[in-house]
Image (cartoon, rainbow, N blue to C red; front, side):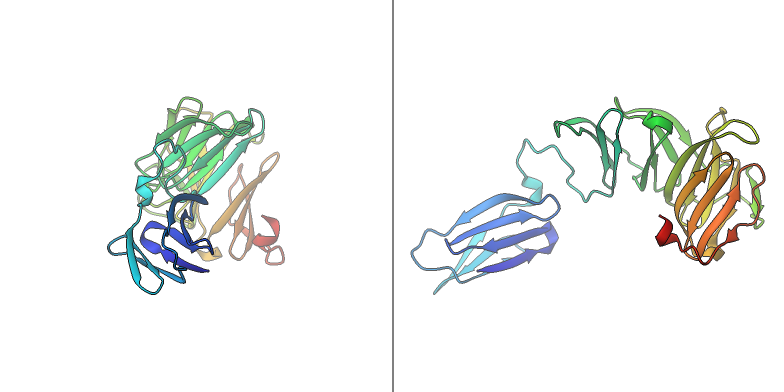
Length: 273
């Protein structure tokens, strides 16, 4: 019959012909409150008082009823309470990893049960797996990349922005400024030497390279790509080629001798990624 929206609580209100108002959480697609109008008169309209968190129903007179806040969701609910920003599936163990702004949750994809959850105070901006999905990578709002044993939420390593990086193109003076870590990619490179290479995008403007084969957790090389419309995706082609999807095309980088990216305008990034 009628609908209303409670923006502050991300709630959708729906009125049906049986004089029942249902309150839905639009982030979880679940109904968590049912309000039944018991009078014989037909309810013809509803409205939401967001300031006082009240429901207004109209028949031949106006009725005011209290509403439940999303924070008062059922006590046994165990999922995200903020919008989900990323999901990854481990096909080997059939585990699903999901994240919101600061929470990581690991689910059993077969039973839909929650296995592990933890909070990252520095914020979660991106997710990725290492080779064979053995470890979880999380980018943070500080530009760091955290490596986790996601079965027990154990932090194994923190890759940070190094002060002594080999800045190649263009010349970059001083320490990188903190910015959100964007897309992540992990690959085993064979040439010029066998390397476990972690690639991270910093603030959509810089591509950072980390060597996971060594003990050093600072990035050893970075490339400024602000002149190419930013970076939106990463990929590697064995044995030594790294592709970056940019706003202007695809830049080709080589790990053995990282040079100025070669832009291929005919191969637009949205078509490849």
